[in-house]
Image 1 (cartoon, helix red, strand yellow):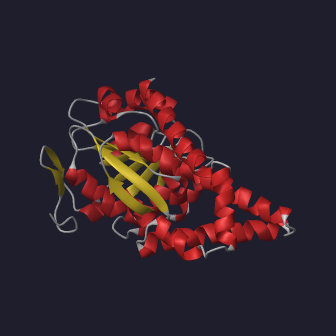
Image 2 (cartoon, helix red, strand yellow):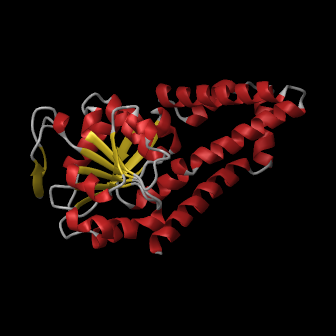
Image 3 (cartoon, helix red, strand yellow):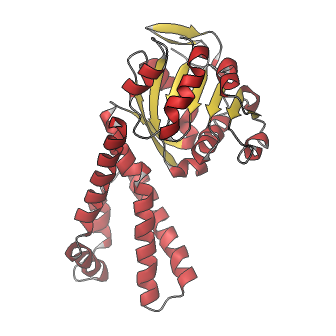
Length: 288
């Protein structure tokens, strides 16, 4: 189905009776993730800012949305009433309260997209009216700069149509993939928390250079550019990390000696352990 020429519909649920370019989109929560996603939707060119509304209990984060032509309110109910695609961008512990407050306004025409870590599809569906189309989405911080990594998982009443719509709208935010719900927690560990792991590595790289005599500010800039360049190469060449590593390592050279030091320090096991620990914590949050 051509999303730009026809209404968006799920084979098991009612159509959103509108052309995609006229789709009304709402956000409940006005933090960095909501801002990044909203920027991506606007950047797609498919949705005008005037079709987007966002709610938050305070005005602190609302001006940056208003500057981009997005409507703002303090009423979550108003967001639901004026939207068909609603992003839930609040802290996990607030989800039950927020959904209880809006559930009477939710219809089967709505798609509810939750960005709350650890809140399962089962929990979301229990808190919303029967038949509601629900999607879990886990973004990461670089979405703010439209360089994010997002993973989608659909509930029992949503599926390929909803995922296709979201991929179309969110592609400017970065990489958008879909998979089964258990992958969401692994994605949290890999990419959601993984951003912070990369920052720890960047900090350590820079401190190593400072130890060797480089000024701190310069070391931080070079570390950031090194990670950026390495990431772009990994993404755009399609080569495996091991292949790119081999291209840098010359026999008896500086890089292989440095890698040996990383291996002696347990770097690889520590990185894998960090992803595992963050994933397990996400699973624990989902059981509460």
